[in-house]
Image (cartoon, rainbow, N blue to C red; front, top):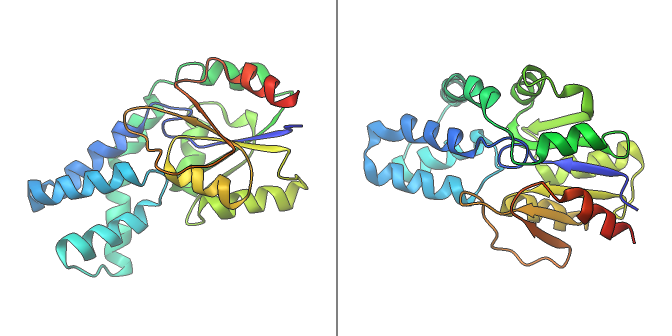
Length: 216
């Protein structure tokens, strides 16, 4: 029986994937269109991975630059300044807020995202939905470890958890922990991995029906 739900954030709770994409475009525009295209292609195929990992990868592989810790932190701050307010103001994925508000007494909710921990907590607070979540997990820890920690701290078995995500990173995190995943499919998500415990949806309108069918 499903007792707890782990939500990704961008593309699952909020329609905020394009906000992050636009920020990467702006930050790498000075290096030319070829670099921008490589950055955006990688970013869209690797949703849910920490921006710190991405900056290191892009600079080293596309620009031949090895970033210092100070340079990396400066880029992360710049990125945060570009996105946070827009993410706070981003609309909810169709059905997400209604499901969260109407069913929080029946399931424990958690968030697992590649967004930095302090930033996602700030965003959730400013969107006034923090009361619904037991814990919020962000980077630098990855999603596989988030799930392990949620299971360990709360005593959940793999049959009592489900992940709701939208990227290959989410599929792998669920698969690594042998828990089911509901994958929200949209134009900026990714789904390149097979997994027997994967269910695809377009929005969160019918989540409660899917969960009910899984309990039978």
